[in-house]
Length: 247
Image (cartoon, rainbow, N blue to C red; front, side, top):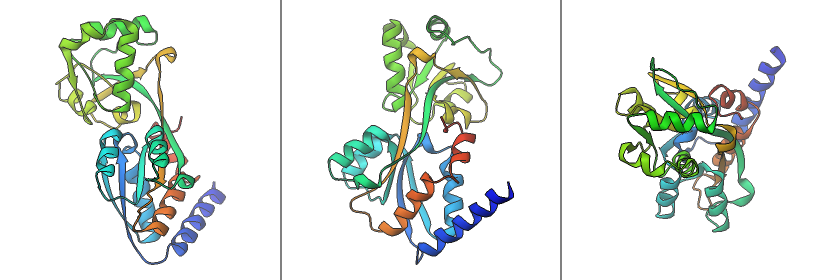
């Protein structure tokens, strides 16, 4: 353990030395990574003196904003979106690194009974029994969950009690605005007043991979590359794991 701590400290010192003058790194990041990134950003800033200016949002929405001209040095988005931007020449393809992953889960308000969603039939029953259900219309988890409802044959039955949660599925659940929420598991874990029931059944699960990449028009490319290496390095892995983003 002591060796690991010393190695980590040395890595951070070397990283700081390699980064030169302090810079402001502009980051566009999906909310799916928000449970882990504040802690990692704080470590990076303390080690390097750089400052990170981050904007969080749904990955698809941030992609649109970026293509419309929103400034960014680093993107932290879902892998398919980063791959598409690389094909368009908007990010440096060789800089892309897959750093974390997450499955879709279901949650209830803290203290509420937890339904059995371990099987497709159990999930179907839980969704039909809920008075209201929320998930993000544009988020990767919401798109995946909408497909699940189609596969279960209950999409039309759910429509009257559906609410679009945007980036606030957990918060809406905790506030009592919905009875059941579907979202990336780490996002639900991070909200006080929410109990995660569990992941979707394996045969219905969709795992989202999150990637980080340097934008082609980065104003601070050296500092941005240092951040990318940090987020993809071994020191970040325990943080991802502790926040539900490790597997």
